[in-house]
Image (cartoon, protein in one colour):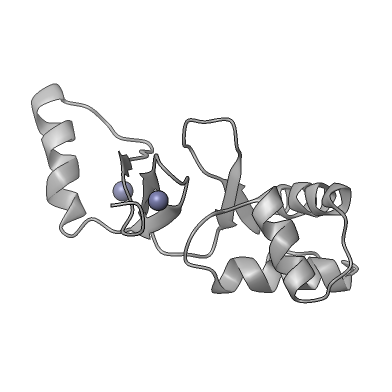
Length: 131
Ligand SMILES: [Zn+2]
Ligand SMILES: [Zn+2]
């Protein structure tokens, strides 16, 4: 919310999407967001959802995540640093954190004299439901 200009018009669908991103612990696709809005009885067609996603991206309220695949997923930009575990069976994506990540990154920096500017780490496998 803090990143939005003060004069931003907050429509019910925009507010709901901001709240959903803030309270969800995994990335969402446009279609998933559309379903969640429907469940909240918020009238927004898929075109509106895409337009609002574009708006939130432009204001860095959310960002796209780096995973391979046809579907684009979005998540809140407010969350703590984390990675993703992707189920190759049902497509479910969970946030995961790596404990002692600094030591992990040192393994990349040290032997190669490499300066890390950014990184993304994904894990592919089967979720608890698909196991
Ligand atoms: Zn990391
Ligand atoms: Zn699964």
